[in-house]
Length: 277
Image (cartoon, rainbow, N blue to C red; front, side):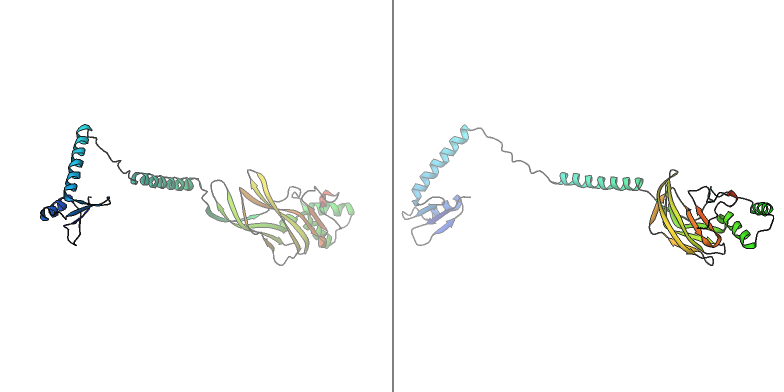
């Protein structure tokens, strides 16, 4: 935009923003010799005739340059829209989120609440079933006299103890296609011998692919016969299955010492768990 200052020689100075407006003011001044023009970006007032001469030279120079130079199309670089990039990022984020969700849901382990676990420990292999009446008859025949009531009772308890000292396990559980989870298993010893048991050590075993992968030891002391003795194991146990077994039992009241790592405790296999310790 061209800008000028114009005065016709009076004290009035007008600011002009176009050549057309300036020419109109020059004509209205009727060729006053005192009229002056200030061209912006210059540093002096000039007369109307000087202004016209300069304008004529500039017009001729511009026309010459335009006749020599070939017109050149100027293309302004188009502004690149940010929308496609943003759209790509948004779509990538959505696809990634969906992929993670699908992978998580198809690969995560789904647990289902199952019926509570309630089992009784198996009879130990080192304590086979025996005919106690036959054993008592053989002993009485060899001695030539009947056994007293207490001796017969204690002998019967020592040979049938797995039926009288029951080891039980209970737990809440969840299952999936491969595993089970057992919540806070409870171990119970139900003593129906009629005597107190001094102590018992129990092993809680967790199984995976027919192998023990973890085990805990639980000690019971002074086990009465009026109510079962119980212990709860805190935490979560995970595996194919879970089991309990006796490691040892000691009861002085009927001279009984059982150990899972022995075949017998006395030389007499008819009374293999007899002891006087």
